[in-house]
Image 1 (tube, rainbow, N blue to C red):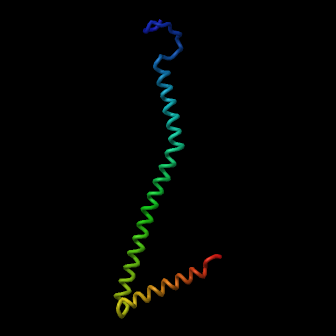
Image 2: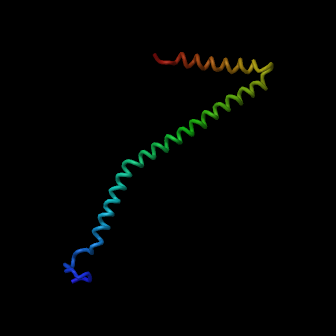
Image 3: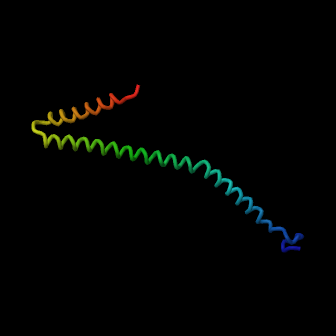
Length: 105
């Protein structure tokens, strides 16, 4: 007889072990489901957020570079700001014409 008064067969585990084993298997199952579903979604969401932040930074840098280029041309070129507008407008038209000629279709 064991200490609880029941008959002991010698090789069986105590009564609390089957519950902890069942809980352990349940936790392992939940973890495997979480690994298969939640982590890829979190990774994709994180990549999307970082991509939007990087895109915003790139757009801001391009705008600031354009403003800086215009101000530099305004200081360097003779005349008023019309000369800087003329140069940047010509560059944009030439770039647009090049891209238009290379389009497919």
